[in-house]
Length: 215
Image 1 (cartoon, one colour):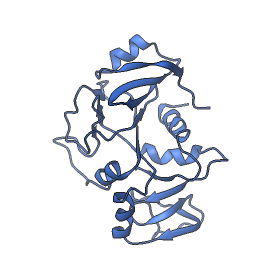
Image 2: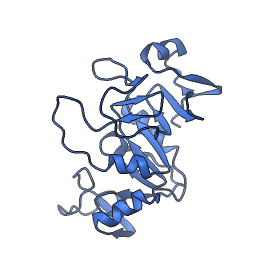
Image 3: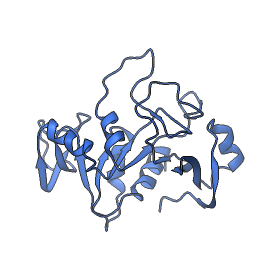
Image 4: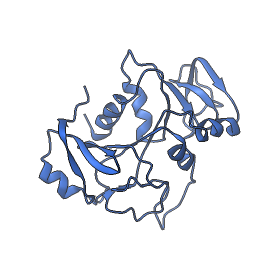
């Protein structure tokens, strides 16, 4: 199992029956593949619909927020972007799952641009992080160059301040509890000391620290 699949599988366990969920482009979209059979969620896409589903009949006019072909489930509803963002900004999205470039120990998120590189656009990230009831960041633990992505302070432009609820990587799960970054689950493939070496951010360890499980 590769790192992205492991992360997606673990995030899927956080979703509850009846949740309205927005999955960001990239890794977060994989979460939909691993939802338990007894969990039924409604996937929202900020380009204008509730009821995102798998592709059944290819339609070039039907794409998700990332421009990828998608499908609709029975009962889906479509609407304009103004209504879509009213849902988001009005607090009607229970969970959003986004990728991340950096997260820091104050629950700040940077995920929309790398300074000096082409910026494709903001998308709905700022609205989602501010409006969703729970914000889960699904990202690989380290950057491609091996550098830390969990930092004392983000040094990329911020998407939002103090809004991250949980971070899931292939090695660990962190939750922000009473403003404190807390390690709640640790992979059996890594030691706590090694995790600290890979993580610039300061964090506490939960008294009931559990093994990271995707089952």
